[in-house]
Image (cartoon, rainbow, N blue to C red; front, side, top):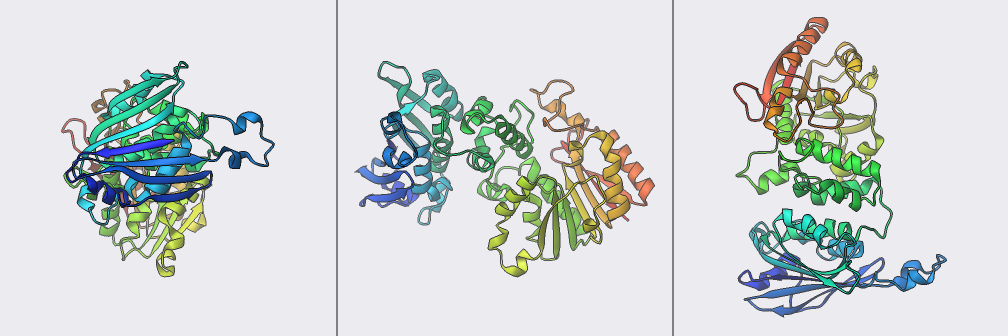
Amino acid sequence: MLLSLATTHHPATDLGYLLFKNPARLHSVDLPFGAAHVFYPEASEERCVACLKVNVDPVALVRGRGARKFDYVNDRPYVASSFMSVAIGRAFGPAMDGRSRERPELAETPIPLEAVLDVVQCRAGAQFIMEVFEPLGYDVSAKSLGATGQYFELTLRQTCRLSELLEQLYVLIPVLDDDKHYWVDEDEVTKLLRRGGAWLASHPQRETIAHRYLKHRRSLRREALARLLEVSDEPPDGEETDDAGAEAEDEDEDKAAPQKAPRLHTQRLLAVVEALKAQGATRVVDLGCGEGRLISLLLKEPGITDILGVEVSTTVLDRAERRLKLHRLPPRQASRVRLVQGSLTYRDRRLEGFDAAAAVEVIEHLDPSRLAAFESALFQHARPVCVVLTTPNAEYNVHYESMAVGAMRHEDHRFEWTRAEFGSWCDGISTRHGYQHRIEPIGDVDEALGAPSQMAVFTR
């Protein structure tokens, strides 16, 4: 199978710096199923073409597994599939991450690019190919090959960053093929969000893309879409987007595009960090810590010496540990963080003795009947000096034109409060447990409707 990447950017040979591959050499990479080779059939200042040729050994793939004849004789060595995605990751990993030692500014610059896949399989036909790539801004050509109507020569043209092109090919090639050659589990959800989060949230075919990428495993698709919407903070059909990133770091994207306002979730996290710092917090509990986005920011604050992340899902805790790279941190730094599994609606003595607690977009995921238990566990028993809570402002939802009246921003939300409802709940907590509180808006403020999120800071 063959992928060709071409540019007419001047000088076009800078493509070699972006790909980390010298145009004057042949580059080979060993793969579990064969090998990949990168070579340049054309390399001038006017036009440069880099080819990724993937050799799949079908015999090695099934040897000793009781294979049938079809397992040895098939189209896998010739048709772009998940094998090609793996090869892109292995051969062009730094380029897909947007890194370039010699041309860092070029890695962030849109340049004219053309990608050609000699053969892709898409049983859904050419129209589906168009529906997948055209919303991403590509000029798409899908030339039918053969009489079956399921094989195509695919050409994509667009002026964009090379990293964007590679990430989209990495995700969408298996989507066209509608298959993967390896077992798919929760790690594939993280991989999808890392490589697709920046553009998938607003894609009109995002549900189909997620379903096919995850081999039609409905539980994984639901998890992927829920996490995608949670990170992007957009309404369910994707009309309103906050430029979500999957596994791309919020802070990294903000640095890459300083002219843009930070995404809403980033603004929430930064507001919470500032509130904790203003209270002089040194020991902080992150309730419902998810994948550790708040913890990663707290680790940058030297005044915060002890961080406890609490999450009900052990799977999510595993992802948080990987995302935070705790095993790679120096021992002194790593000792500042503990991740534990626990419920937020039961008394937990591990939460006692901390001077601050944060719950970022957590309470709306609890059934209303469990809010009293959450209140008791946190404000009566754990009883930190400071508690910082954020939750959506339901009044602001009218700005999301695609949302039906009465709908909520996330399929797992049990409720969304107006400013008055949130204020009333906070008043009750302060009265019952001897706290004072203030409520602040987060995000762009509408004079009549308030901000998209609201933050309460409780102190005693």
